[in-house]
Length: 298
Image (tube, rainbow, N blue to C red; front, side, top):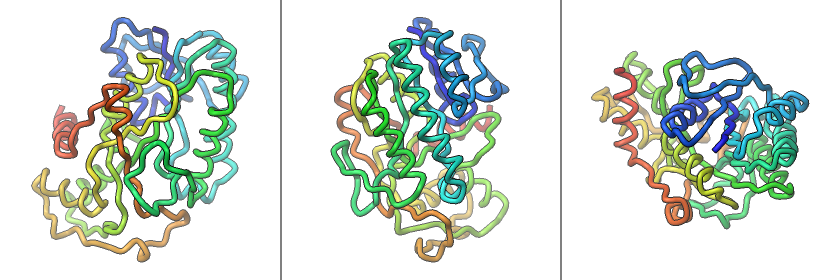
């Protein structure tokens, strides 16, 4: 199977490259604006800027993938709020280009979306929940979903929640790495205790993408961890696992934070559909921390 992945420099893109490299029946091409520093030798690379429509159409036409896994996006929630044109160009116009390119080569699209398309009035949520974003990032991702649903291609949309993990050359942090680094440096941190999520190990999300690709899955799937936790609980468990000082972690009400973008208070996903139809089984949060710790010591 010929698979093309966008966003090869991101956390998910990195995990996908290493996962696909383990499967000899898959010939994978990674794409990004610049080549990742550490790429498995089994993976081919094509330079591609998803915001350049001509570039997208050209690369996908040449590679002729059976499946495109669209992992690239602008996901910095506050930056999306303040740089709206860039956000829309990256999360909506780029999706339009990728849909057109997939239609031209009859490729199946696996698109990664987010819990932030929901308003957070309740959770956990299944695939029938009605989207109602409370920030511009969520609006852009929902607009991307609608473009895909209205297209003439075969597609699956995989929504996920609060992804964490580690790669050798990470340009951005995530909640687990931020907590670990802060506590190792002896810093006190304020962590929200009135929001709820189902944190997702990057390897699990990559596995979900792989399963959707090999099953040529169609429709919407929620791919996440199975444990509902507040960021404060995530931080405390991280401190306990790495034997760091949890007394440095102070619980904080979300109203005490000044951020450009609103956050949905309660999301988290019900993953029964992905478990039943795709055979998706995520790690526990403790298992995820153990895997991350092992990778940090390599």
